[in-house]
Image (tube, rainbow, N blue to C red; front, side, top):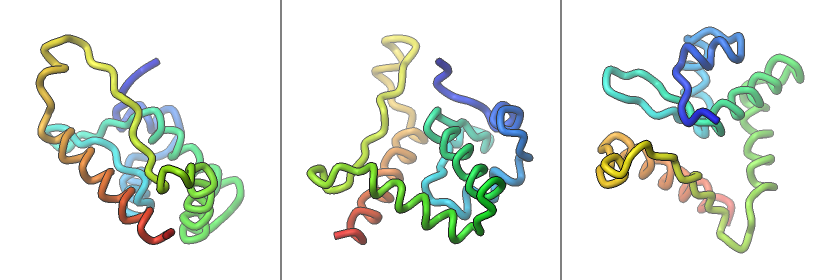
Amino acid sequence: MKAWWTLLEVCELTGLEAHVLRYWESEFGQLRPRKVRGGNRQYREREVQLIQRIQELLYQEHLTIQAARKKLAEETKRQENPGQLGLLLPDPEPRDSDEERSTLDRDELVESLREVLDLLRFGRRSW
């Protein structure tokens, strides 16, 4: 299984244009690919699955973006375990070497902290 996909790979996989994926990032808060140096995006498995689900909601179920957002929020809420206050932690990411394990990339740390803040904000609204 591949750990990260590039924007072009996700475009090929889904049949979507790059500008559509970038637009969806602004419309769907759950869609937050990692941005590496130079602004290039890298997508994890769960983000690719989310893109495919958004594509299904918009193109097959013919929902508006607002309705798709609402449906995704409802689906996420159903999947959460109420005993854990609705917090979903990201899956551990595989590392290639011991050296990489000991060095945490600053951009990766910032992105992870943003995800945690988003989860906390979302969880707070549902209390």
